[in-house]
Image (cartoon, rainbow, N blue to C red; front, side, top):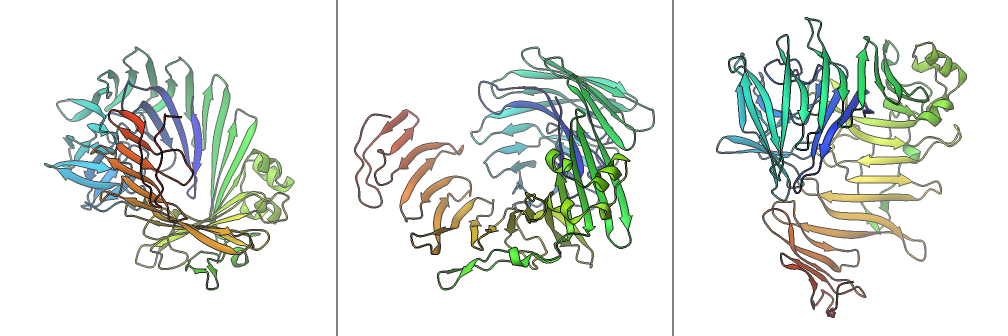
Length: 520
């Protein structure tokens, strides 16, 4: 059955379905996931008729590839409705993916140690070559294989088979709709099937209109230009989008999602929003406590009424003022019709910006702060603040999407934060957090994590008492082959080897000797 989400801050609507999946005897789970993303195709690849398709606006992680675009950039079309520019050896800003090639065959590594290999090439009629996914390795080295064929005199690439890490085969069948080759059926090794139906107007790329999953539950999908509707055996759901531009307040947009006719969610974005606090510096946490600790931050508390999104869940939607509800019931949207209390009962998110180097700024998907819904429409909800390494301006995003600071200012005025230093793949190396001693004094404590040179395998963990609590040895597949764990007063350390698990004496870093004993 489909599930939905609205991505902020652009309010793109996503509909996802998982009509067929299973867990092989080993290796990655086989998941035939489909993702619908509304709006303009950001990749420019959805209507490319020289590859297998699932319908306009639909993507699948099994259809991902690397290409060099017309501007000369190496781009990863990720099968998730988006794309990422790659640079050899340099982790991407988001998701920390690392790109490289072996004997001319490109690959992408994730921070977990998993690797995707792109060994199937197809050159289109414009001379652009795409390298498609052929192997998907998990961190333990188990591989899923993808096999392809070509049709239409070798100009169209089709995915024929996916072979799981246990050697079992999944097959694909197609229907030829106009110039497009659409996936019509997927059959797993146990003869479970997923079926796909399409509509074609002889002008636009085919539209996916129905999905029948492995237990024969059928979902139909339709779009009338403004409202997307999906009907399952459990009822009808829909999303409606609104777009306006105001000379005073700039761009405004909203998404109104109705689930099964009983639950309503409203999402809204505004360049500038009236009736919202413009400066939240009084609610910003401090990361300095006299001579006890001092960590500089660049929390963005100014212009908090700009670049904002708001989410009213079913409970918050029911609490909207009568004027706002009446406007929405009439199929209209205007930010100025919401009262200050309406905004306070919403979940508010504020987003950092990026400059194109030529004076143009735009919002990003990097979060500045998040304010929880007010409990009564009067008191501001608790704010969670985020800060990032490499920021050149409080309002700009940094050089890594994972936060270095997550902080709060509590209702009693005290500050709390977690300060995280990371390696190049985003893994935490130092985790510094606040705490109060018995006298109520605010202090910080640090946990230290040390990794192998690959920045993936966690070798040593040292706790806030400077005690080494864990040491690991790994094989080439990122698997722990030996683990030493020792803490004062704890059970004897566990040693994991290929032969099994047992306890053994171990002298810890504080000189205590663990006594061997049976497994608990």
